[in-house]
Amino acid sequence: MKQLVPAFFAVGAIMALTGAAVFITGWIYAPYIYTIGAGFIALAQVNTPKGKSKTLKRLRIQQIFGALALILTGAFMFATRGNEWIACLTIAAILELYTAFRIPQEEEKERA
Image (cartoon, rainbow, N blue to C red):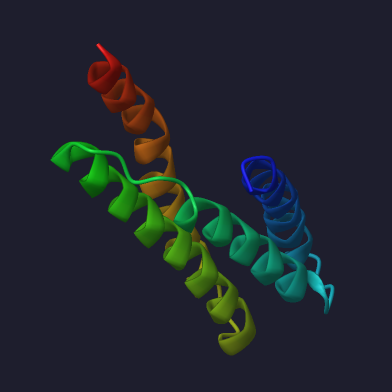
């Protein structure tokens, strides 16, 4: 399982990026590719260990909310005709970016 989680994340990230980039062209399969990729990212993040400190647990929960926002973005791609999905993707990206920098800092504090 240790090797499977990073593989899910890598494949999911490539699929989500491809689906979001190609969605602008109007290709009919782009939302499917994006949503499957977002699902892989969420699956990888849910299966990472939470940690022991309160701060690390809070950051992991924020990371999971970001992953759920990625999946919600896929739902917006299917359900809406405008660009509402971009707003949801922006929120998800901010949450994911914040936790990507903060979690390693907190893990380093926990080790020290």
